[in-house]
Length: 137
Image (tube, rainbow, N blue to C red):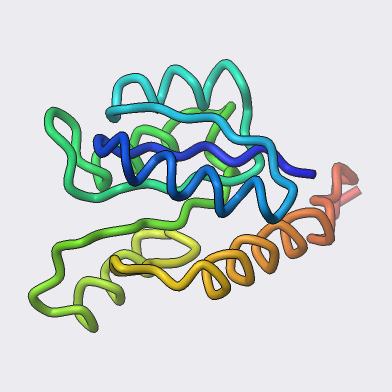
């Protein structure tokens, strides 16, 4: 079981994503905007974040950069989710180049979402640990 933080301004979408993640046996954390999402991420240290792009106040891109700039949240995998995509390929490419682990557009297939989340969690758990040994010693 992993902790998944859902940051989205739509209560209906948070509930829907929460049910999908609970079905996959993950613990759910939620936030209704970017500021709350950053607070929850720092306090709860989720294993993965599902982040809406279009939100009032801080948009998803701004939240993502705040997460990456913080030592406590910089390694948390982020899947950006958006309903707005006039140019999906270039938006997705830009998101991935910025360091996001995945980029999805609404509507989302529950099965696809669960597979992507579980794959990222598996990779995170099984990533080689950075060596603390001095390579020049």
